[in-house]
Structures are given as structure tokens and as C-alpha cells.
Length: 259
Ligand code: ADP
Image: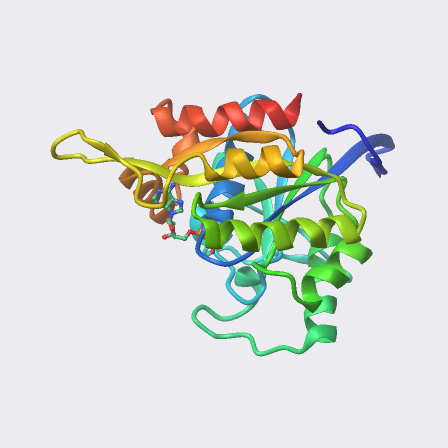
């Protein structure tokens, strides 16, 4: 899946092939950041040297998800040094650079400059950067996709129609920027009641897989709606670090991407 343009960068005299994969969604709240953090951990577990750029500059959540909230990136001249999050993942987020809880009210050009700092940081020997995009299809996304063109994109959606329509719009954003879509991930698919064990589908089921079929895109897998996913996210210990069914689901998707 990762075939395509790669960026050769020099690291300690050696050439490193570095790829960029953007994780996008049509709208917020579908679990794009959660999926990004878990895929990073899962890829790391199979030995991929992965870094994370939290480009969701208006609502950065990677510092919590990957447990690096209290770290501040150092700078060497103009170049930022990524901080190290959980599972030794190098990462940078606007959340590391602005005071906690302060909202950013930036216009496009300022946001663009801030993003450039994250992309142009010293990523060392990282061979894959996962980029947690802001939700939707606004100016920031378009500029970013043009300026720091990813090698591929993954789209996260919940199973219901409304979210799917937005996901399709996000897909057309990547198409316009000529970024190949690696596939769709269905999140919050199915819920198993912790009390009675009954399985139900609050947001419907299989919608993303059907949409992938219609759009002729690969379907990468589904992640259930689960307490474990949410709680582990809040604790900064993504569920993909463990071997629960949810963790395995993330790892299966990571394996597809790494192939
Ligand atoms: P987005 O990046 O799309 O805005 P987030 O990753 O921030 O979405 O997720 C929104 C909320 O939903 C968070 O509280 C997160 O913990 C929760 N969440 C995401 N995926 C799941 C899931 N599969 N099961 C339970 N909660 C989830």
C-alpha cells in the first residue's frame, strides 16, 4: 500500500526513505486522532520507525493520547526537536507549543507557518510520519496537502450515512491534491454491552465497508465502540499497546498499511 513517492532525507550520513501518511476525516469526533495514535503504536510494535505530527492545530489531542503533555520541544536554531511520547514515539503537536487550554484563533497563513515548523523539525531516522489532520476540508488542509504532500492518506469514518457523506468529501480533497487514498477505517462500529454482553450497532454497521466498495477504495478494517478504547486514550496508553481485541484490530490495520 505504501508504494509511491518517498522522500529521501539524510540522517547521520545515511539516506533514510521517509514516507508521510495523512489521517483524515470529514468531520470531528469520529476518532481520527484515536486511530492515528493507535496506528502509531501498532506500527512501532512491528518495528516501523514512526513519528507523529499533530496537524490538528485547532484541537490538538496527541499530547494526551501519546502521553507527552508535560514535554516542551527544544529548538536547534530554527529547527524543532520532536518530543518523545509513549512507546518511544517522536512527536510534535501544537499542543506542545501553546499554553494548555488556550484556544488558537489563527488565520490561514499563521497556521500554515506553524505547521511548517512541525513538518520541518528534526525527525531523525523516522521512516514514516503519521499526520493527524484537522477534520474537514478547509484552507489549512488544502495548503498542507499541497506543501507537504503525503504519500498516502487514510480516511476514518463512523458507520452512519451522515459521517460517510463527509468522509467522501474528505476523499475528494485528497483526490484533488493527488494524494492516493490507502483506504477507509470504520470506527465506533458495533458495541458490546459490558453488562449483558449483547452486541448492538448504535451507528449502524458495515457502512464504511460498503462505501469503500462503492468508491473502489480498500477497506482497512473496523474498530468497535468500546470503553477500553476511550479509557486507554484518556490515560495516554493507547489500546494498541496491549493484546485486547481492540488492540488487535488496530494492529491488523497497521499491518495492512505497513505491508
Ligand atoms: P477526532 O480526532 O475525529 O475528533 P477523537 O479521536 O478525538 O476524534 O475521538 C473523539 C472521542 O471519542 C474521544 O473521547 C475518544 O476517546 C472517543 N473514541 C474514539 N474512538 C472510540 C472508540 N472506538 N470507542 C470508544 N470511544 C472512542
